[in-house]
Image 1 (cartoon, rainbow, N blue to C red):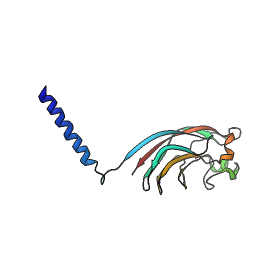
Image 2: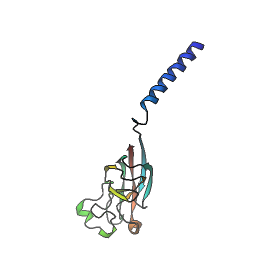
Image 3: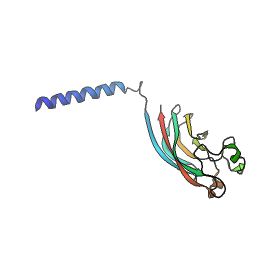
Image 4: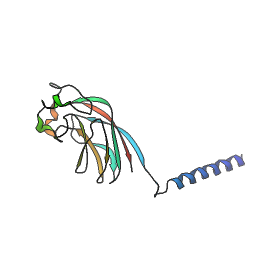
Length: 155
């Protein structure tokens, strides 16, 4: 029994030291991910991910549908509306005017990014990742639905 415990201890110690050597600060690459539901009925929503300058943030649409006006326009993915529908929607409601209504957008502090169905963003400053539909706060009253995204951060 004693030799089995000693062997187990030695194996654990050896494995632990390998992990410690491989995880030295100079060679560390943190990698973590999470899923998050984002509602079209709310403004900026904290994704629960804090990033540092230089971090690579990958956002990928997983499922769900939303609309910027459930009475007039169809439900779409986080890619947003095609151009022929986008042109029929009240343009001052867009936060990012060059990107379609209904597309997902991101913000880290003061920097805005288009996500659509997927994006790879290099954070320029530290802060919490926030996500929302490309539809201004005053225009959210007729929105409906939500989408689920997968967020992965690598530094």
